[in-house]
Image 1 (tube, rainbow, N blue to C red):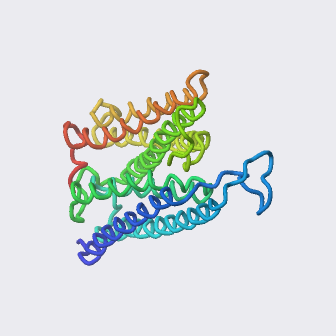
Image 2 (cartoon, rainbow, N blue to C red):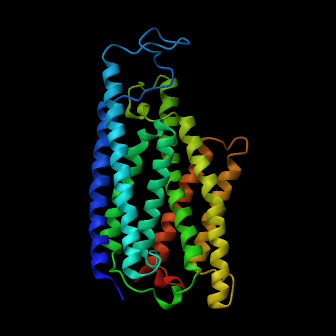
Image 3 (tube, rainbow, N blue to C red):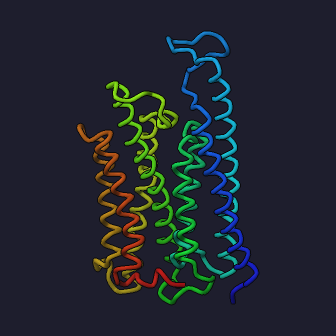
Length: 320
């Protein structure tokens, strides 16, 4: 029996979350437009620069302070939206009396939630990463809007094929892995843009006044993308293994090269290749970052094309 009041509350919270995330995007955009990223050891107190660093021109201190205030406001809105986002999932589950990731609407909602949680945790731990807020929360808002208008289904019971405790194991780890890979792919794309810009500046082909200069350093972005994949890869590996075990229980075979299984395995291979490339001379840096971006493309293809265009044993994933 569906609790209609909780279901309506979940829908309202979803809309509220999109509004709050949108406000966060506006504030992060203002941070990049009107603020200035503070570089390490840029100033020492109010006196002379240290270690040969160049003192900031007069007036830029106000820009830095303004940027910090805007960035802090963006993070406050992100955390507030994160709380309402989590409430969407919680109330949806309570309304349907089950785990709230039994269809594409719920699955993708949780995937985006994981990505926002990961970004928030990283930004709170390393404040310089807050400067990528626009580039993370922008895609988040777009994804939430598409989820609401293209994937929405009313809360309801699970289809028979999903009524298994394996749902809590396989699908949970799949959402965690996907959310982490989503964030890592965005960060690698930013790394590619930042490193290319830095190369142009070093060659005298560009001025160091671009918005890209307000992002974290290329090294910090590359390191963040790598660490996120390192954390997410074992989770995705377990999701693939758990899916195979569930398939044997449900369909009598561990692996049948169903489109969903095939592309999940392809994604696993791509991310394994990325981690290997990171340790291989000649593939560190930009080449490995391109592999990470390819991994995100494969994940999105698996989510969209495989679920809505191709046919297979996982076709029920798009319905309530």
